[in-house]
Image (cartoon, rainbow over all chains, first blue to last red; front, side, top):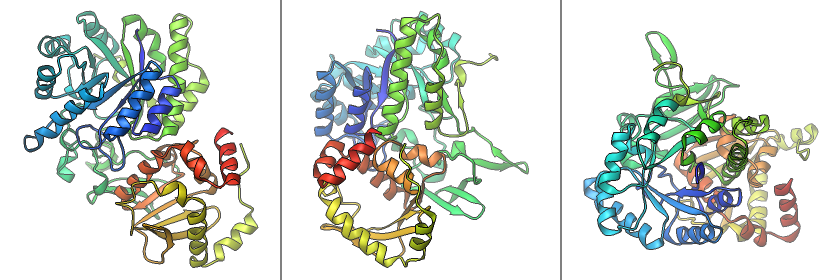
Length: 333
Length: 150
């Protein structure tokens, strides 16, 4: 089916909420740095994963497991162990970024369905087809750097299903290759599983504004009525040449409701909602809106127009000042 | 939406009270009403830490720590302080708002040990609401259900 709705779950409660509100598939991670949301208290142990699978399967939905960080040489077995557990549990697909781990999965579990993570950073059909030929991947999540015509070019030249990000926090999008936070904390998202390890983050309400710091480095100072963002280096405001501004990226959220008819037409396989770190309330609200929107566009693509109430609901949940169509819609090439 | 604003006169009176009696009252009440539902949490990294909750519009501040047996009042410097207005705390407790949403819009402030704050948030998120409701005293469970359904 085209336009599968893939929703995030940081806990069993969120998984059930996503299923109840109409997700076709839910993605989750184990409780360690084998996934890119390795926050304390978040994610699934084996018993919770088994219960989540039971709940989803009973209702005809699927559960995907993000194993999308890059294994480190001294702890390789943690990542292969996660693949073993996924196969044993009967996970519907694992989302991988590292070719070594793909090789392991194919060799040991030829029936385990593989998705290429956005962290794999494949932006062309040649790259996607390479992963298909060598590891038999069935779906690829494309990095958020391509315009829609570029996405269409990939879709037309591969038999691999294509999954696109539809909604949620944006990053600077050197997906799978970002080391920025390691300059500040010694840990990067691809090895440690988080951009800003919680232990290095400090928030302080001061007379001049709300300050966020990462390992002592001032990231931003939000004025009284300014919306705050996640405390990541890429979204900080810095003094450059005597001016203070978002020197790398402004904190905004991706929202592609407007593009649904085009995505349907070009045969996009799935839409991914970002946010495993968010709470069940977010999962419920976003899933409900996207379920309604996808049902509406499938019924009548020509006449599709996002309801103002959907946009208002999504805007409320967004990080930063505004939402954006991201690179999907850009006039320059 | 319920009117959850606090009468200004009452807020004024509450704001003038010293911290200790509210903290005592909070711990006693929380142990009676909430502990049965919360004791199944993985408290390992949470016990012995010092917490503060500030309800800004009411001017109410409570400080407490957590032991293996429940909440206990505390007067030391808190390691984690969570501040918001009463209505937003109720929206969070009834799971109608996401903490990050409130945080982005500056309605919720978390200060101190961020890792501790995230652990608390993620553990509370992972609590099964049905199980919590079953553990609450009946009148409180009914009120909570009404709030969650509003």
